[in-house]
Length: 263
Image (cartoon, rainbow, N blue to C red):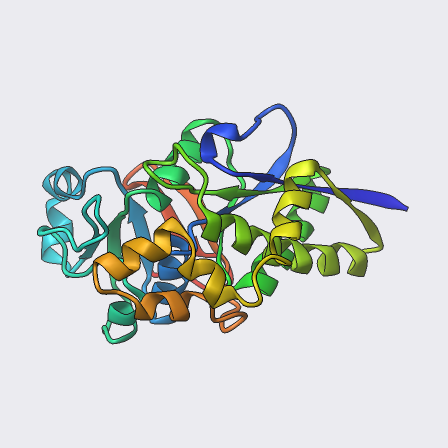
């Protein structure tokens, strides 16, 4: 039988670009969970940026067509230049059907930009919300590429250190990756990094305790967004599979590959 290789990059800077691969980007608390949630709310597209003010100044049409800004400060609180932060509880109460969103977060959007700029062109957005759907698509795309699947954790402190919540989420995603691979008559081949993530699942009795124990969980408590911890652990509530791509007009964007993006 053929094999499907799975590995985990605990930080974006660990990614290797020497072989064909599909990358599943994870920043479970909160950027990638927020992206999935925004598409579930009907968002048309998401522009990833390192500087929301610069992006808005370069695109006057964004100010005129109702484009929303989702951005946070380094401590996780909402940016003064944004309508909302990547807080899952706030996003769920917003109306954003058909809206474009300009998005900047401390780790998640930076990780997406880092991956794309390193030459990775197959980037899917993963979270617990879309765990099954994203891993089925990742395995299917990897088969087409004759490549492997790498789960890339956004990490913390601008992607410079590993994040417990991301690595735990990667372990859950790998379970669905195994199911998807076996459904295609492929034998999963676990690299050591994938084994570490899978073993982490046995340390905590449930996802909420794992996320509460993480540095990201501590941040949520500090900025009074405790509700986001529980919301981020909700599993398979979406079949949305966001995908990163490049547009000459807008730069690096995210679209819902399971739907039709508004023009």
